[in-house]
Length: 229
Image 1: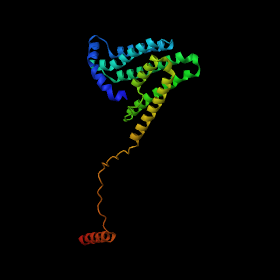
Image 2 (image 1 turned 90 degrees about the vertical axis):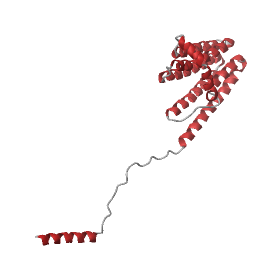
Image 3 (image 1 turned 30 degrees about the vertical axis):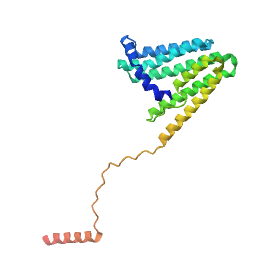
Image 4 (image 1 turned 45 degrees about the vertical axis):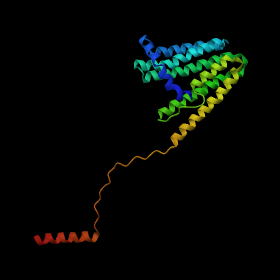
């Protein structure tokens, strides 16, 4: 939801900061790696129950995620390789954060499966978008995208007693997002494709003369040859 509405505005506002980082010799890949490191630190803080520290680290994790694209555009190095690395890093970051939640909830029994289910649903949402775009369709949008997951997790960490309920709400909304994207792409793919125009030129055929007319012509030709002998 936030990705479709405000992403372009945020990227535009981050351009000066991206330019400054590039002048300082910081590449977009370095910024992405910093985001992964910060996500690992956030997951560790969540796992040991340091939720206040985890909120701060979570905010710091989101900064490199927003800046790597700005740095790449400022340096003119935006490429397919960079986009691939950024996408893989986002998925890895998600698993780190949900892994930290699972670490914290492990002593409570089966509820530890909740963060893993959420990680799987989030991966499904991301896969749907990637697969749809590879087929020429648009699967963006939904109630619970990556930005919303960051905000919801931050809220849950601020009020630790609400961690499990918020994770359940995140799971339900992420599953709803996956369903939304599936229906959206299904409708796009269901539209009939206009048939290609037949570019072959129509073949010209000579009108066939009646058999009696052709036989009469043959007799006349034979008689003309005999008369010429």
